[in-house]
Image 1 (cartoon, one colour):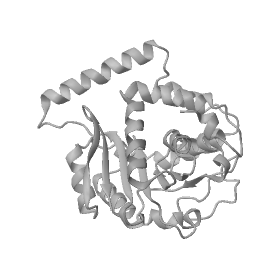
Image 2 (cartoon, helix red, strand yellow):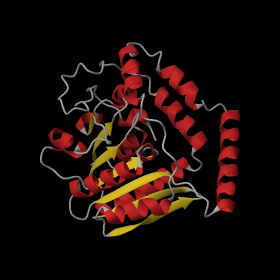
Image 3 (cartoon, one colour):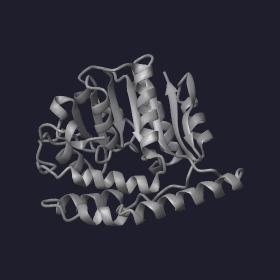
Image 4 (cartoon, helix red, strand yellow):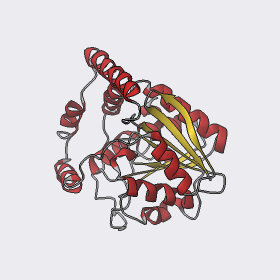
Length: 282
């Protein structure tokens, strides 16, 4: 992945969680060193073994199901790791990245810009029912071919997750796909598999940190001292103050939720221990 190859322009994220349209001044216009996204990737790879293989699998399935010029909504896009990879892999793709975290949106905007008019960033709270309606301006009457996410939707409660899957289903064009890449932990039904997965995670982290990858906390410390982000950092703290992490979920919960949301084909299309890419096709 090359953050620089996906980067062009410097448009600001649009929209706010209450549905207001941004004036373009809600997030400071800035250009950020792409190395900060590279360090995010290194940090994430420390916690997610086979992260690039997981991205490759998601992108392979995306191309096989909806073609080389998809309109894609990237849920909880963060600083743009998956969005950048989609834009690099599919030169005809357009991506709408949505997130609630103002600092991560700022990084995505500062590193990737608008990718030559192919990337739109929108400030959206997925936990609020009706989030998909806030994409109306960005979609401009079109229906996306795909909705994707990577290492993000575990922040939602189970009831919120089902609502997100249902809204994503209703948003998609006929034949569209949802692809969610994340850890779906082994539960008490599989204690030996859980032990193996935990040992694998620990070994991955040891190797990555020994090779110089930043920790989660170290990366955030770097971001919080970027120029002009004090207000964004304070807003981030306010937004997430009452949103503690949720208990881990197993893959079968996600497959059942996708089926309940209306997807006719559901399954895991890639797996490494407790790490999956799950698919739902409308």
